[in-house]
Image (cartoon, rainbow, N blue to C red; front, side, top):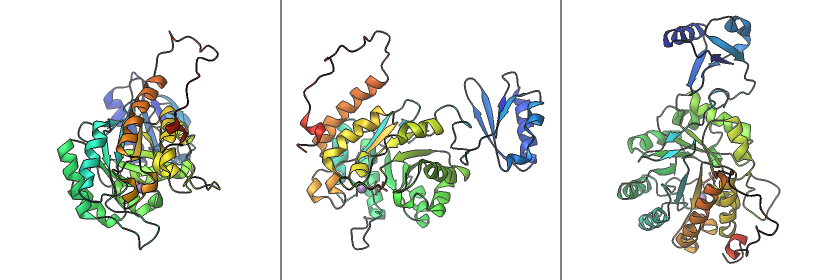
Length: 362
Ligand code: PEP
Ligand code: MN
């Protein structure tokens, strides 16, 4: 349930109202927007009489929120949430960031890849030190040493790092090492003990959609983190399993505007895991950008054929550089002011197809 507070309400009246609600055993979530203040009421609100609240001087109106996700719900927080990822990098509410780097931290090449992606405009560095692999015999990641390598690159390049935490027992290590953003991978999207553990920290979380997770399940996973106190959650669409076998996953581009509609949290697209093949990563990245994503997570490797994981979907630094320029153009196109823009003439949208964007020369 949400209570929209009248503009005339004083801070004292608002805090009195909150104390009154909390005294009845509910949790509250206050969103102070530019135009209105909303008090979200969390708990079994069937016991609250909305007419009683509406009869109070400071309450404009009351609305029931039927969705099970509350803190992640846009009704609780109408304005986009902007998250500070460290090193002055903000995401959400118009701030767009590209997280790039190899699937796994492998050693010395990390800094080389990091320098290249930064030069091309990436603003965050990704790389897995703890890897969720389908086979226990595959490379499992460098572990703590991998985190240190990431942090060295982060310090040199003044870039925040995003890296996956797989085990609730490792969360404290990520906190102690001051990892900028913790990633929860698709396979752990419903590992509720892990979600609760990262929820107890103050570190932003990049939360991936489960392999067969619905949009609502993703939002409920976000709710798990937020309900523990950590409201810095970035949602990530990374493709879902479908009947299609030509790609590793099926990129649900629809989920990007759907998530924006349902939630105030930033939404990132991951075209690498969504497609699984280098040749399709760029077109999918453009689609996610055009669909309004607040950022992208893209795997880049200096020698994809020698990568220790996910080489088949890695962009080379050159491909990434090219993609970044087009991503920037798409960002300006979707936010362009249309007042002076004429309707397109027939034929004016014709352009020679770029082989790379059709996946034929990758
Ligand atoms: C990754 O980012 O390398 C990864 C394992 O992603 P996902 O959890 O989406 O498969
Ligand atoms: Mn990967």
